[in-house]
Length: 141
Image 1 (cartoon, one colour):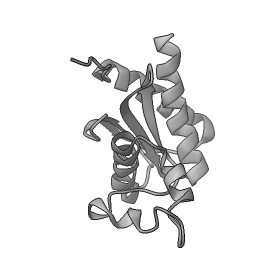
Image 2 (cartoon, helix red, strand yellow):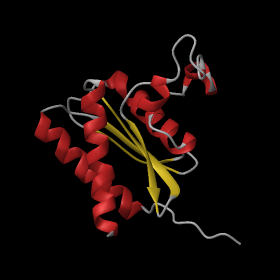
Image 3 (tube, helix red, strand yellow):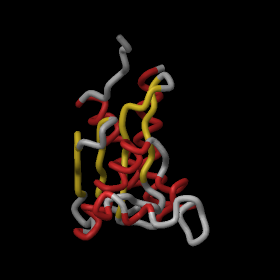
Image 4 (cartoon, helix red, strand yellow):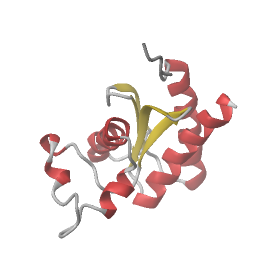
């Protein structure tokens, strides 16, 4: 039987705190979502002035990154017309995100989840998500 690491609630809390701190540093209130390896929501937070319309986007970015095990930015690069994943954003009832802000989480080479952020620019969303991911990786060393 194969044993694999799993994200815990404490892991999600650590990631959330770091992501929120980064959002405050860059001055953008964010919607932040963290999912397990099946794309199931573990934790969500909407900062006070985060966009209401970005709630679902953040959750779906985390879902895409966690379940598909690839960053949403990477999917965006291969999903335009004539590209191998063209139209993928319409799959799974439109939940599949193809713009930056969703990152997969791997531990010891095993996929364990994803983090997705929305409310800023795509680069800001990814920066905040990366802060959460990096906090977890630092804690695991």
